Length: 334
View (cartoon, rainbow, N blue to C red):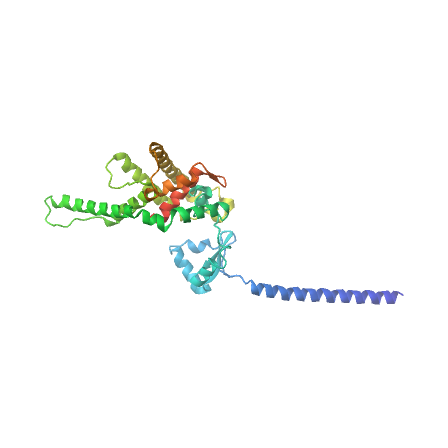
């Protein structure tokens, strides 16, 4: 009896081991098939435990050249680690097109960075808002009412008048210099600054109906300098990667003082935008009727659509100021 029981146990054990080995082999083969179908992009070697590949960008070489060198070595698609976050690098237009067409839902959102929080009205800016109901509503408003070909055509007179005024100012500079005792008819003009003023006047006229340069009053000159300096700082700080963006546990340490600069810049620009809104609301209350569609600037359009409304927790003033900031940065492209 003991011998029969022992033989039965041995047979059961062998059968169980055979089943386990067969199952392991099946699962291993299945995992290889799945892995081959969902093969991930090559991960660049040399990542540090916490910093990832940030050390690659610590030298004097520009980031795009560093990425270009990596692309020559690892191909048109690869992955690097920015702190704890992984970043997919594409160096091929066909793959980029596929990402934004076939797989657009995967890359439709944006990460919430420190700059988004302090400079982008905590995600209210259309260009930085995460994918969701708020982003979809703002996209609809911007594409149908703000940045449209019809709106650009309606404001063509602004561009024409600003170019004419700029040429006249150039002529006045030449004429005033020519009347003085100069041996040459040539006048030196800093065209970089001149074109900056022309573009800035053109954009602000279309967005908020203001013209900063070519003015004589001291208060307007000071406001123009505040606005231009604030926007330049904003665009610079948006390109900064803070420590908190890549290592969240160090978010409260402001290495380099970038977070402080972001808060100060945001506060300064928000104060200017509040003044613009107050002036425009006062003007609209004085006028019996709002200008027709042909004479409306972007601020008028946004006030007509969003004044007094709330979208996904953001009040109308915040949305208007954030959208105006996006429009200025997009069109001006400082």
